[in-house]
Amino acid sequence: MMLRKDDNVMVIAGKDKGKSGKIIKSIMSDEKVVVDKINIAKKHIKSKYEGKKGEIIEKPMPIHASNVKLICPKCGKPTRIGLKRIESGKGIRICKKCKEEIINNRLTQ
Image (cartoon, rainbow, N blue to C red):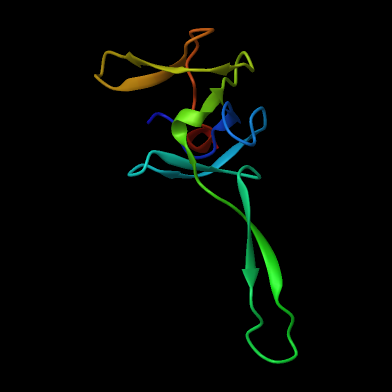
């Protein structure tokens, strides 16, 4: 899975198809990602003590990584991610459409 935290992605399948958002959390073991304001579930909370009301909390739930595509920061289109090896033996992520390097937003800040 080549998706990382803080990547902008677009949902390509499911009830939120066509929506986009930023990855909040990446769950590598299950190949799932949690995207901000996508796949929202409502959780009903009971009151803890008398006098306080119960509440409904909206929470983003995980979505499988195959159902999202990365939005390239250079060309702005949803794209697949490629891997390119460099001299040091490390791999860098590239956009399959414009062939440009994808820089992780978290590392550049």
